[in-house]
Image (cartoon, rainbow, N blue to C red):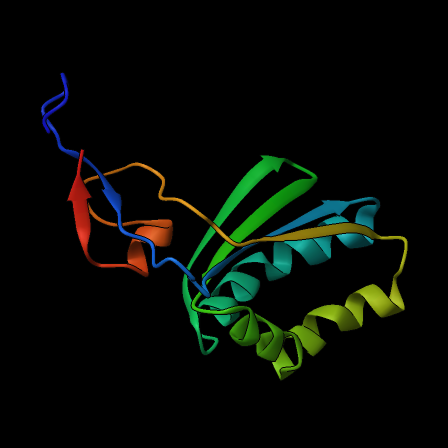
Length: 135
């Protein structure tokens, strides 16, 4: 279906029992060491996450000068858990263990039960499920 703007809007067919998960990870710098560590390592965090087995896409955003959010899309919760046990995640957590008050960290995991809406090339969950259904 074409919208008023002249591009198609579509949804994807999610399997009835999808294993895919969305991981939302936020970081808030609470002091100067946390601020500099966060900005020094943000690109590395994004790149090492997207290279992990089972990760299909990573989106990073700036909420404020002191806060960033990273959203990653995973084929399964098992893939995400495997990433947590890996070297890259251990390296990320070393700073937190040495500087426990420098960063406020938060994360949430979601298992989508229905499709979002998309236009143009696939993003997010649409990168996992290629069969597209037009609206």
